[in-house]
Length: 271
Image (tube, rainbow, N blue to C red; front, side, top):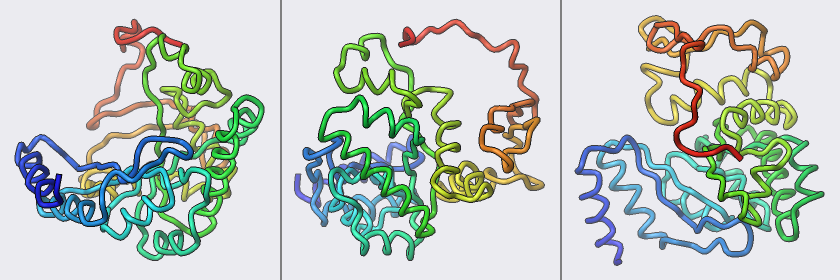
C-alpha cells in the first residue's frame, strides 16, 4: 500500500471508535537477525499523524536499532520494548534522543537469574541477543529514560511446549512469560538494574497512566481518582520482594473478595 492508502485505512479503522490507542510494528517480530523494517519512514509518520488526529496515543513495536530510530523520528508516543535491539546495542545518539524527549519506554526487564539461565540453555545467536538486551536495560536506567513496567506474560497453550524456542522460554528460570509472576520479577530486575525503589514503583503506576494519558483518573493515590489499588502488608521500597505481600485488593473503591474468585482454568492448560 502507498503511504496515502495507509492513511485512509488507518482513518477508517479509528473511525470505528472501538480503540483506546494505536500500536504499529516498526519492525518484524524477530529476536535476532530477521528483524526487518515493516513500514517506510513516511508511512510511519502518517500512522502517527492519524492516531494523533483521532486523539489517540500511538505506540510502536521495535526489534532493531534502525526501527527504533525510525519510530522516534515518526513521533511515536510510547516505545514498546526498546531494549530489544537484536545483535547490536542501541546507538548512543538514539539513546540520547529517547532521554531528551522523555519518551515512555515499556522495557522488558528480566532478572539476573534469567540471564544466567539464557547463557546456559539458549543457542547462539540468542545468548548474545539476551546479553545485549540486558546491557540496553542498564543503559536506559543509567541514562534516566522514562521507564514503564511491562512483560510478555500470558496464558500459554500446552502445545507451546513443543516449540523449540518458546517452549524453553516458558520453562526458563524467571521467565518473562509467566502470567501472575512476570510483573513481580520485573520489579526485582529493576532493583538489580539500579533503579531507585520509588522510580520502580512509579514505573508500575504513575508513568504508565501518564503514558496512556489516563493519569487524571489513575496512576496515583489522590482525592477524586478511581480507587483501583493494592494494599501491601510490607513496604516494597525496602525490598522489591515485598510487592508479593498483597493484603487487600480494591477495584473502584470496593474490596475484592479474593477467596471467592474462580480458580478453575477455562482457557488453556498450564505448561
